[in-house]
Amino acid sequence: MPGPVHLAFLGCGFITRVHCQHLRALGSDVTCSFASRDAGKADAYRREFGGVAAFGDYTAAIADPRVDAVVIAVPPRFHLDLTLQALAAGKHVLVEKPAFPTMADYLTVREARERAGRIVIVGENDHYKPLAVTLRRLLAEGVVGDLVFAHFTTIAHRLKAADDWRNDEAMAGGDAFFEEGIHWLHVAGSLGPTITRAHGYRPAVSSDGPDRRAKSLLVGFEYDSGAVGALYYSREIPSLFRGLRLSKLFGRDGVITFESNGAFVVARRRGRVPRLILPGFRDIRGYQAMYRDFVVGIRTGRPPEMQLDRAIDDQRLMDEIMTTADAGRAQR
Image (cartoon, rainbow, N blue to C red):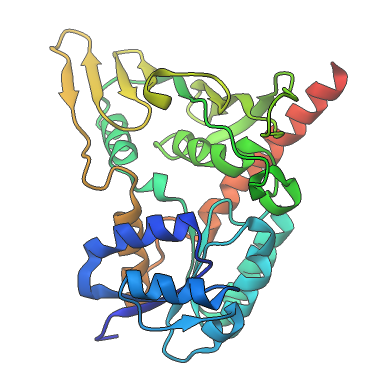
């Protein structure tokens, strides 16, 4: 493929704008088109981001022979159908996370991917962000020795409006943790050791305000290395600067402390001077690295890091967490 990879965005909402702002860093490697049920909106995005074409429906974008791959950026309820359409049309697919509401959907897509011989990447940009890359490197280097405890905190006060589609679990696939906490679950399980068991604990759900979802969850988990961990997630608790929090990895030889969003890392090993590490702000959310991986996969056939099979592992954990959280709530 000598020319740029032609991506068609299915959906012209907030997240498509985020993706396109980061795609500018890839320059001539990528060109874009836009599809929306509102043709005027698709054309507005085409003009704003220098796109090739605008489509008034998703099917037309999928069928266009100029398009190499589609980015599915609509609510999760529609992900499965659009993914299967795209694969049947011979397109590569990047599907936003959470990719699909059920494990059966993932397995259906995996079969379709094998038949089509195309790449399906799940848009887990957190896998690629500099913080996650830095933490993986430090653990691989044995900076803290054997991992004992992993403590992840992501707490902020970010309520959704009453008319936000995330308030409809049929559209979103689940509650706030399912829709957004999956990113943090992936990071916790991508640092080297593999999470083998997880349990969810859901506090009482507040009925106040327009955001009606369950917005907080505590997850306890075990790694195959013998380490254990906890993930504190909430979108209803105030925090400094709307989300500034510290997380830690405790080892037998040291401790890694990091700002949960990736601003800084402090690595302290017994008997040595602590190191301050700045993972990097240029691509702090990992979108640019994710798209580079996708483009290379399309051009070479090399499986991307966040291919579908890796997301299936996350979904297995999510199912376990939701089942145990629901059971615990029912018992109370």
